[in-house]
Image 1 (cartoon, rainbow, N blue to C red):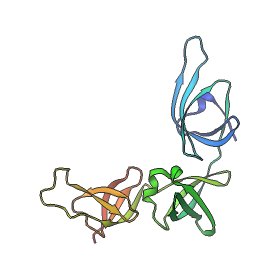
Image 2: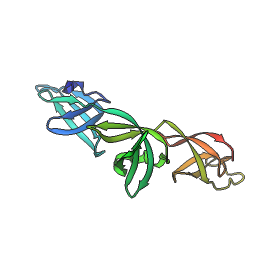
Image 3: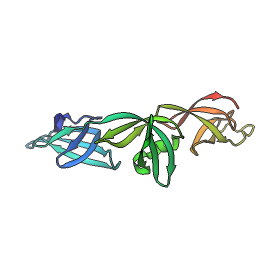
Image 4: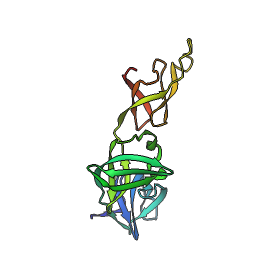
Amino acid sequence: MAQLSYNELKVGTIFTKNEDPDPYEVLEYAFIRMQQRKPVTQLKIKNLISGKMLNYTAHQNETFKEAEIETAPVTFIYHNKDQYWFHETGNTKTRLFLTDEVIGDVGQFLKQNTEIKAFKFDNKIINIELPIKLDFKVTESPPAIRGDTAQGGTKTVTIETGAKINVPLFIAEDDIVRVNTTTGEYVERVEKA
C-alpha cells in the first residue's frame, strides 16, 4: 500500500489512517495555511464500513495509507429486516450482506437478480454501486386527472421495488420505465403496458 501525506488526500481518495483499520473516502478537501502555524487539510470523510461521515483535520506529521479496494460483480438476492443479501455472481454459495445504513437510498432501486458492482476491502464487501440507469415495472399509478397540469404535468407512481418516483401524466400501471438510480428521477418510458 502506498503511503500518502496529508496534502494528497484529495476528493475521491480512499485511505486508512493511523491505527484505524477502516477505509475512509474523502468527500470534501480544503487546504488551510494560517499565519504562524503549520498548514493542515480540513476533510469531510466517510467511513466505508459503517457509512458514518466525519470532519477530520489532517496534519503534516501524519501519514496515511492508500486503501486497496477490489471490485467484484455480485447479484442482489433479497432484503430482510435491515439487511440486503447478495451472492457473488457465478457462485451462489458465497453469501454476503450489507445493512440499510451502509446501502442508503440506493436500496430502494435494488431488485432481485440484478447484477451490481461490489467494493471489497480485506475480502469483505463494504459498499455497492448500481448501474446509473435501470428499468422498473410501474405497480401503482393513479389516474391522470384532466386539467391537472399545475404540478408541471407529473404524478407520483410506485415501481416494483416499492420506491415512489415522479413521472409524466401519461405513465400507466404495468408500463416499464427507466430510472436514474443516482438521482431517483424518471428518464423515459421503455415499454407501454
